[in-house]
Image 1 (cartoon, rainbow, N blue to C red):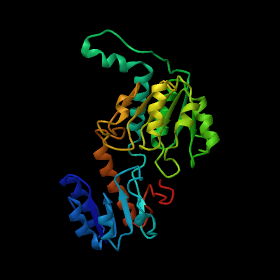
Image 2: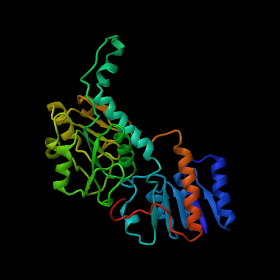
Image 3: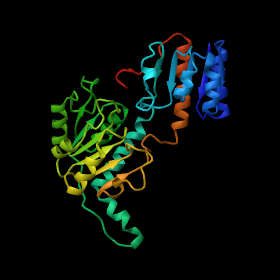
Image 4: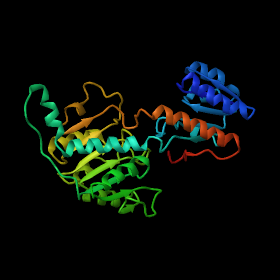
Length: 317
């Protein structure tokens, strides 16, 4: 069996992956760019890392793709979805702790009024914004995957009531007080009762613009909205209007529908908004975690076991 690695691992990391393959009597190839990957993948059964249309189109023998990403909205193009013999697995859960930290950092910065204080430091002004105590309030989580569960752990330390929506996880879960399915009525329930809402679900056709003007109008005027998963789940035009109109107290976006966000985009001028450049999954441990997972999952595959984190290509996660 031949395996192609198309990801910026170090030479040592590639050697460790190659040792796993060779130890089982297989061959591992390494591509530094897309052109090289398209050339080397032609007789490979496994592809680890990046998988563009150009690369997968050149791989008639491909049976398994291990993505470097947890979110799959940018990678599940029709040729992959419709090819039944190709299994795709992702890295869901690997970046959950830092995602929870990022969501919580945004929420704390908004609630504690840090934005006005930071913005006035260059002027040496001793000033700040409204300060809210989160302890004892209600947190709503849209999506109870890794990001959602890690955010819940942090909220529990603040004695918050935690409610959530998830299409898969319905059984009682640690740190979640109530779980419902993401139907329109249940979304309204979560938005109306929450003092802060954190979006951690994947972007799929079902979640695109899940939160628009109608949903924002349901939220409390004192509530905060955070999104750390994927751009496009929140209708940005509706959010901008809601912030200017004071419909909600503030928002934090680590992801946008268009990235990088253009310099002339009106999000930059929205009040009480924190923007970060898609960094919720970033960590000093991320390269190591990806490499370790890329070592463990091929071992499973080569031994005839199912890889971890297999994606339902039709559902998008």
